[in-house]
Image 1 (cartoon, one colour):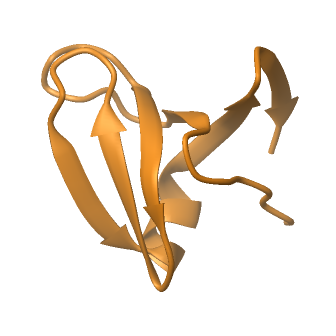
Image 2 (tube, rainbow, N blue to C red; image 1 turned 45 degrees about the vertical axis):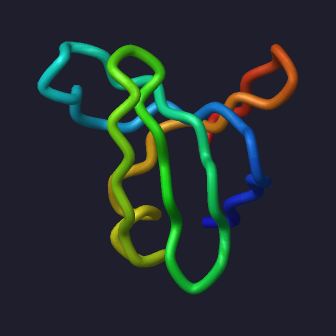
Length: 67
C-alpha cells in the first residue's frame, strides 16, 4: 500500500484518542512521524512503520483519499 502525506496534512487514525477524536495533524516527517491532536493539542511521536499500521485516511487540502 502506498502512503502519500506531507507536513501539515490532516490524518484520521484507526483508534480514537483519549479526548474522543481521531483527527490529527502531521507536524514532523522523517524516520519518525510526529502528529498533533486537533482537539486537545497533545503531540505524539511514532516510527514510520507504526504510523502506517495505525493510519486510516489522509486528508489533503480539504479532499480525502482512501488508503
